[in-house]
Length: 538
Ligand code: G1P
Ligand code: ZN
Image (cartoon, rainbow, N blue to C red; front, side, top):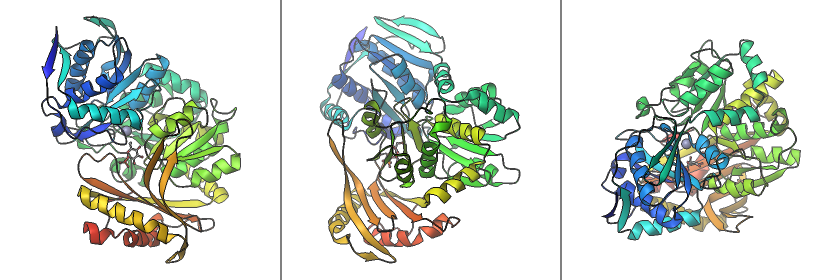
């Protein structure tokens, strides 16, 4: 029985860098989730259409997914393809959208943000491209959320999400699929599994941290069961509602356990971690960390070692804030090169129009056009394939890379929990200074370019501005932007890059110190926010 329920709008349902992300307590408010989903439906007109649905298993995933199903029936959806028990990683969902030619998909996740009642919840909406919707569509959805007055829902029992196969709910078909199978098949078609198997059989040691989130079952199947990594190589592999209290963000700060293992005695040969919904990755060697910017550059440089890419790649793109390491590789290989605003959706048109094959962000995201989202396990397999093909260690591969291309010492400084108006004023003030900085000497640097970053999409010609950059004559850079994923308040991100051609074994923190001082001064960070230091340094 379809019911139309009266509702009143919430003012804060604008999607950010990656969908809608809010405190769980906010999403738990009455009709909050329903308002948002109905607003999407009002824009995308889902009647007669097919969508993929899943989530990273966090708190409220199980409740929200049932609500979604009942609203989908009431809004005339023809078919939902749902990951068993409601699980799907973001990359697995993107794969299903493309493989099953659906009209789009939904992942219930707040990505790498903590979960649980006191954590965050979120919704990512992807179109038939397999990638998240454009800014234009998300603005239309936001407009709907401001005026919504009713939503439709079907009054039925909860659906059994454990039973694989087809079932019917009123006029809608529900296909429950194994969330892992299709994803594994795709990976087998990209990488040289036989070669990686040999690597593990030779005694190569490995540690993967799934951080109690969605990639655990994928990682156990791929790395242990199929590729033969020793049992126990994958840790924290049971998805939990609150991620066992972990902050499932694979970086040096939050993947503490894994970092301790990799920097301890008897460290394994290779270490990696993924985030809550499986799209981010961190790569570690024995007592060695690879920055995501370097990782993108190294993967790109070695594309010819991978079966799916060995006949050539179109090009590569990075978010503007990501270091310039991959730019030098693109030049060397004479392939296309693009810089886009932060957010994976900006890569989608470049992939669809065959301008790029690989792309990445400094925020631990790497991927290729096999799907339209970043892909954590893909990045790990890529590294394993390179190691298996070259017989070199993570550290050796990276050091040889620096020798050839120079080293971009790179760090990001996050200033969290700033009042929104303070943050906006800081950015406005900085923007007014940009034209004055060009040609100026700042410490030992000379500014070559200082500007607000504007991107014109070569396909749809839309323009987006995102943050500011100060580029020095020696190639070093300072980038400022406000986060688009904070679930409350504002976060200022300052990205620092010091380019060195000769000094290759410095300490990153020391190497960027002067740039940090300059950044603090020109943005007046202490004066405006009261913060002497960043809250997080990665
Ligand atoms: C952050 C990252 C960005 C990434 C996004 C979603 O967004 O910086 O690279 O695409 O999360 O994972 P931000 O909070 O900086 O807007
Ligand atoms: Zn994520």
